[in-house]
Image (tube, rainbow, N blue to C red; front, side):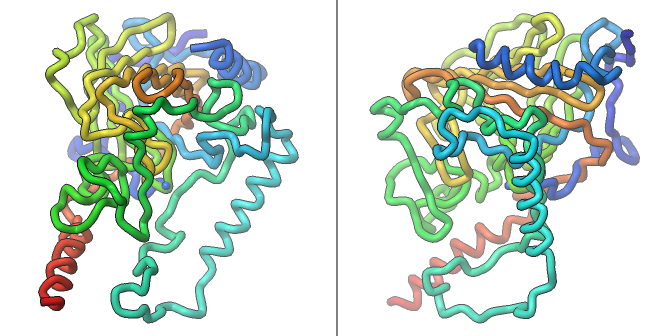
Length: 370
């Protein structure tokens, strides 16, 4: 059975035509084939799996708001060894543990405020509590132990010597002991200039918008729009938008570098394939976490694949290939769930008093020391 929708239909448009964005929706190999096959087999029993929602031009309809939250980690925990999948009982136990922890953190606290020593005393001086977070509380449907599906060990490949040299590991408690460009999303090297702080602290990029997209603590939503000649990916966090042409045009010249690179798309059967190059040296080749950046994006090629498995599931896969930084390519697979909830505006730079206060506080400290 084939379902047809009109090309250009915008799946979630708010009042007066404004985009709606969900606030704080929480922070190639045989292995890829087996992962996709496992998902397909698990969905085969559902009538929806046999239906393909298509646009008027016959392409799979990928439009909608998609939620990519999950508690499945990027890398397989080392203590699991070669265990690629959890049992149903193990997955249920892990999900129950997260639910219990979440409920406990949401309980009212007897201590509402706590004084800190001047300067914070080496401690974080505060932040929002669990109420504001919206991280994943479920494991991916096939119960994989990692989002990385290739290499088979579920771990990132080894770094090249250049990758090791360009690796930045930050901390929310102290500054990075490095010189040069800050490529981590959070943390920084100091507070002399805005450029000393992480990219997300400066609202230049989001924690999870990428590319590639990565589950994080909140705002794990993207909206996809589709026409015969282009697709548009709108990420909730920092309202990043990528307009991806499908007309076989080449990438931008190598001299043109952008925060989100140069993306071109094509259809391979019913799968949308997006290839991205031309990333700027101001970003990393890959960020396993908000405080870790590996390499630069200059020599990285990112290949993303979008496959609609059924009405409620969009399989998002991406392969990072950067021989300058990693000993080999690696592939990640994230099943996204269709969301009926709206997306509200994400305002970051517009209210980023935190960055301003960091710089002001540093100047006050310097003046007091004179």
